[in-house]
Amino acid sequence: MDGVEERLTKIEQKGSKRDEEEEERTEELVGKMIEKVKKKERIIE
Image (cartoon, rainbow, N blue to C red; front, side, top):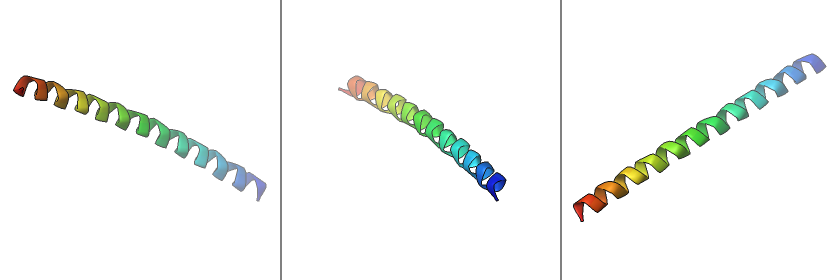
């Protein structure tokens, strides 16, 4: 059983690492979108 549990733990850690990376990417994209919107608002004003 130990071997299986160890593998599951490793898989879970990889999964959470991937989730963190995706979150960071999403935050970057959202930040870029907000900047674009702000620039457009300035142009309209």
